[in-house]
Length: 606
Image (cartoon, rainbow, N blue to C red):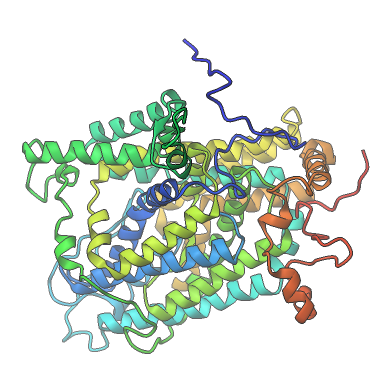
């Protein structure tokens, strides 16, 4: 039975002439109330918390840290601190879209591969449990004795090499973004390239919900069902909350309390909290075993309680906390290759975020600035010594479409909360104790939304064209086939150089990198009309948005530029020549090249 909403229940969004209907409740130009901002920020933090916890622990395994070593909590606090700092920088100064920055798992294969070198082997006869990456279980580091290998590196020395190699590799990304090379390359990117790149990001993450649901598929299924029920069936229900408008109407005799659609805005957070509570009840009644070796132990609410005791009350990360960074050439080469894979993934996330925010695609300077800030974030992360770098998180972008909240203040608030949690270590440790099934169920729905978000770009493409179908099918199939082949047969690639093998395995094992490269090459080297490729449809939309930019609060001049840009150019006009700075026309007072979608050179012809 279909439920219809009455007109007085639906907030009417004014028609400003855009080619598409705005469905967001809180847009970039319409910030939510403080209560909604904080709760939505917590929802984003909870979604990225599994990787924020798992990746630093995998890095700790890579440097042979003990299970109860304080260095684990130090890496976790430092990683969470850098996630907050980079999120604030990227959202406020970088691409200026609500994008959460978190630790990148793309760099893990390089760290796991370097464990096989003689100087990185673990000492003593302690068996180190192999960390799980995706659906892979990496081989345990070879056990070695200090007497037979006198050049073994200590934990601090390994972190120093990670830090120096990350800092050196980050300079490449800074160079690419600072010189505008990314913006120039985007001239070759069209809807046929964007669709498989974004969709493959979601498809490549399917192993994560499987891993987190392993301990209790019942709780994970409950979490997924709750997200669907909250978002689709209860999304129209309004719940009175203490907002500013309700406080003003409280003293009036005929004042009407305005409800907020909490189920629509916070379905993921409410699902996680509900499953967390159910897990607590089942833990208290001893439904789940207390044996840590049992596979259902991670479904317990107290499975990660040791993390609370291991985390300090107050800790402030600082550059050089593990010593002066050193350099490792194989690590640096591997990190450089992964930076290129992460770069393509980030650019795809920028387009996905723009689509989720219902604004034009980011212009050249915004993309350049976003990549530049990611490189700077990697440089700072290397200096702090977290052992990994931050990148954009695709699941949080899909969550904006699901929750209909796409405002940058939410992500800025999330950044400050993560900084606070990292400094007050006990708070962050409490959040890190969320049971795995509670996260697995919610992530399954979010990743599915991400796939559909990428596929929605194909609405501009002629899907009756054999050329387009061949390119899309090949990009999707190769993007899934080759990484799975590398996963099952990792020893097939033998070039004679361990560094080259590591680079090839990382590049060929990244689905969005493979699919994006295949799509961009075939789309630009084979014959096809602009109409069939979807270029003209994007051009029409951009031209319509350009005409209505004066009336649209979400125009490029307010989305990707800063309010103080004009004042800056009055004192330093040379800054407008930088490829990552907005280029303003002093007669028009708005962007010139920036107002258009970057992939297309527009000609106002029908």
